[in-house]
Structures are given as C-alpha cells and as structure tokens.
Length: 182
Image 1 (cartoon, rainbow, N blue to C red):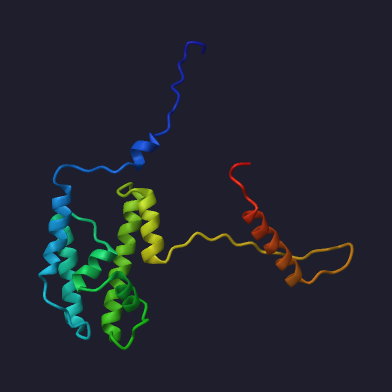
Image 2 (cartoon, helix red, strand yellow):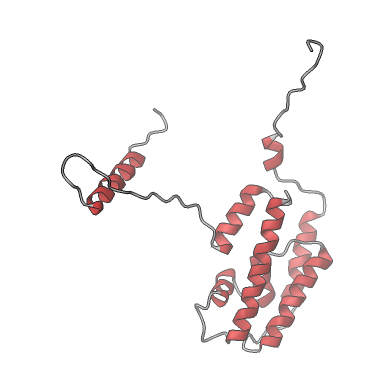
C-alpha cells in the first residue's frame, strides 16, 4: 500500500472560469443580431396573434443566429424597454395589454427563465452573470429568514415584538459597526 500514489484533486481556475471569452468577430455577430430587429415593423400588442408572431420571430432569430434569448432582446423585438415588457408580463399595465396577449408574454418569460436555468445548470453562462440576470429579470432574490420563538422558562415574560425589535436592532447595529480594516 505504501507504493500507491494518491493524485490530489485541484480546483478549477476561478480566474479562467470567471473571465470574459471573446473571439474575433463576436461584436459584429451580436450587433448584427440586434440590428435585424430594428427593421421589424411595430406590433399591435392588443392583437394576440401579432404578439405570438413577434415572439416566434424573436426566438427563431435567436436559434438561427445561435444566440441565447434574453429579456432585453425580447423587449427589443417588441420595440420597448425591458421594464415595459416586465409590466406586461406581470399585469401592471393591464389597460395596454389584453389578457391573451399578457398570457403570451408571460409564457415567453417562463421560457426565458427555463433557458436561463438550463444555461446555469449546464455551465453555459457565467454564474455571476446568470445570478444577476435572474435577480433582475425573473424576480429571484437571496433571502434569509429568521424565526424567533420566545421560550423563556425563567424570569419575566418578554413580548415577541420586543424580542424581534431587540434582535433586529442588534443585527442592524452590528452590520453598521462592521469595519473591514479590523
């Protein structure tokens, strides 16, 4: 057994994994892909068939150009910004969009969400970029929940609200007292 050589596993190079990889012609490829949509005629979003057709055109263009679809790209395909597209999908501007059109935009968002998860799970997108995009476009969030259960056997009974206030003040106070130089 003393002759057995154990090969030590090494971590992947983080610098390499998080760096930007560009090839000659990438900028032209991305720009030409987006410029195609500038020439598309306006869409009447009150007409669900036009909405469906435009979504199909966008996803087909992405497939044809071998490009990842995105919320910003889909917004460009409709000639709006991404916040308008988000409002449509979430019913914030329900006067502009009939229910059938809104449901189509919601489905497109679901498709984009599924694609992004697939890219992330299969190493096809930088994890930092994926997290950023999913938080900003798909409503994902980092949350930490703290549940306080008052359980005092000895001493005075303290109301749960007072405990919660005390611990929140301690947490907020501790984070503002944090000095990275210490």
